Image (cartoon, rainbow, N blue to C red; front, side):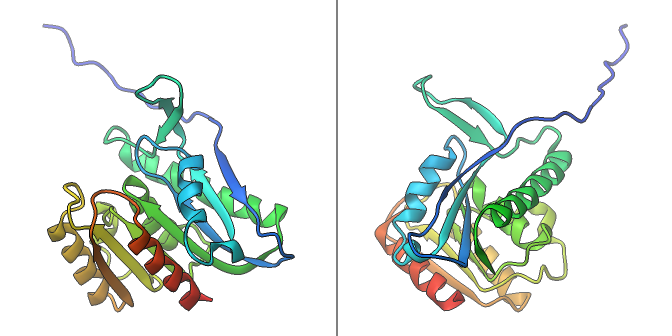
Length: 220
């Protein structure tokens, strides 16, 4: 009988990318930094951030996940934040990457001390992680269609900022039960949390963008 295979992991270097849309006015500007969903890319997420009311007053940054692949049409390059394989190391790698992005953005642009993280779907977990573990404190969180990652649930508190948690009423992935569980857990930690259920599916809608705009205004 053959012996079990031996699995060895190695650190490797890969390239990351982010896309910005600076305001037309002079800085310093608050920073709205977003994380896209599975199978999307930074440009897709940036277009959604741009449609948030009042976003023109923010320096918008959409971060692309490190794991790139071709989408279903085999033309567009999309990305994923991680899989279950090597998950713990991937979380650590992603946190270092996000910290590097924020540091680089602040070196290139005139920014204030204020940063708000936004995440959609798989990117929602990244927004939670960024707000709790990158060393760049957040003034707010905008969460859409995604839940708290499991490694953060067992902590007594994450010191999270005011948080908007939204889901579409027909979202079959981020269910009402998941939404309610996260909202209750955040509230138990003392987080100021706004829960929004809007008419829609697993998607951005004008109703959610309006709520996100109000949330950003309150952060300022």
